[in-house]
Length: 428
Ligand code: COA
Image (cartoon, rainbow, N blue to C red):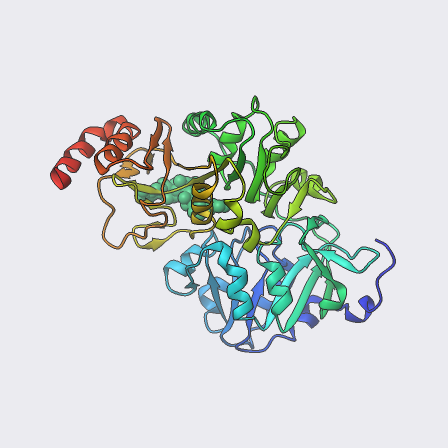
């Protein structure tokens, strides 16, 4: 680490000292994913003297002790995306859910600034700039507007480039604490995911720019792109699979019509391989989510292809991606931002990919009608192509009858006849 910048040493303290600056009733925003300031949250969760203190973040990879039932009087979690460790609290009404397109989050933060921002950053460079590293997304807006900024400075946080920088002068409390970033193990890709990956890859052409989500399906898609040429990346997030394709020369970003020569990304979740790859790497341009996910920005990218997943689709093409019935499972994330952006992009396409069944094959994810109270994420007017392991159903510009036929053709064979019968009973 270069010589510490002016004013740095005076701001250094322990995590316990830093969180003493939090008052009851404060609204706290933290970085997300692999960028969560874990040492600060651990220290905060020891403060049982606080009352009704809000903790807002999007995705978390680790534990969320502030969501424990016994912490109800102390903390109230609020999110636009439920994850594994926060989902139960959201579903049981012990945590709040605020619905929002991801691209609108920074503006919402600017209009409703938080009292405290807690982030994790890389050590400062010789000019006094720390990098927000793997989580730039809404963290930049949080830091710019919060009344108090507390930063965990971690030498394992990569120094990513782009809109990622925060100056030491803009940080109030510094907690030096080195720990490896959380890593996401590679998803398990079985024959179903492989078939989905192959069908998606058939819809991708040389020179396309891609957005991919997280998990087995995006990873499977990347496996089948090895023979493509000059792909680009403009994506809310990326993971390890993208690094392999960059190293093989498949992703060059040469044909992008916006940010040519750069992978534009909002946040990163993967293994140490990814975190090392992005460190000081000018090919990776971290941008805030109100840029990356803005449908009007995405639209300026010709041949934009978005690939996201969902839980259930009805025969009209209405897509449920974030809830099982009315029970919140995740959130809209960037799905609709990219579906709409891709629709406005010259040559753009959006793909919603899912296995044809759930619950070990006992439930069809393609249904005649959604159940009562179902939360629709992507409307039938926005949906473009739906993919399962049985193929691709093109829905844009199709009649209701054609939509139903195309969707039934990619449903699991065991459910096709029943879907036909239900369709006829409902609409014919
Ligand atoms: N009915 C009942 N249960 C269902 C179901 C359905 N139609 N579809 C899925 N499930 C169950 C699964 O069986 C699974 O249960 P299990 O964990 O007990 O096995 C669970 O719901 C999760 O399903 P799965 O397909 O494994 O989810 P996933 O982890 O692959 O995530 C989404 C899929 C759709 C939830 C996720 O992609 C998402 O949140 N998308 C919305 C946001 C988005 O697209 N962001 C993109 C930009 S990053």
